[in-house]
Length: 208
Image (cartoon, rainbow, N blue to C red; front, side, top):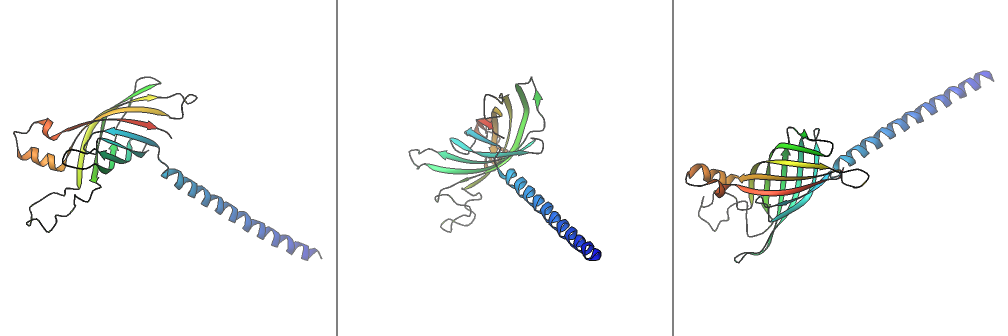
């Protein structure tokens, strides 16, 4: 009788230990899933004026790497002109901010913001590969996709947690140029900076 009870205790301990191990494994799986999902939630929203990505561009973004790196997804709007219809744009933008200067507990300054972005026109009148109706090598650039580089600065105001659901607001400006403009500037010395540089302004609203 005593031996049977002992065997039952061993079996129960084995079952409990197995269930406990499964529970720990399940908790780790849930934590990993939650962590992955949280990393996909946008951290901020941006609105940008000009920059060769539309008159206005808006979209979400993520910062990481101790806030030195940012990735933006921006949708822009190009208004209708006399010879064209209105168009939409999409921009994938990568920002790098090497350091930030804290002025006081409410303000900070980023003396350097730089990076690159790819912009495309969401319109069938523009193309990636030259159409067959043109002579071979008539166009050496895609009319739909442009690669840009930029440099700028940023000023940030930290908001009180008890008064706002935003963590901070940042205003910034950027000077940018694209691949086609840059090659034109290198090959045509008579061009002035205003011919190949674009000035833009923006607002970043940090949420998380």
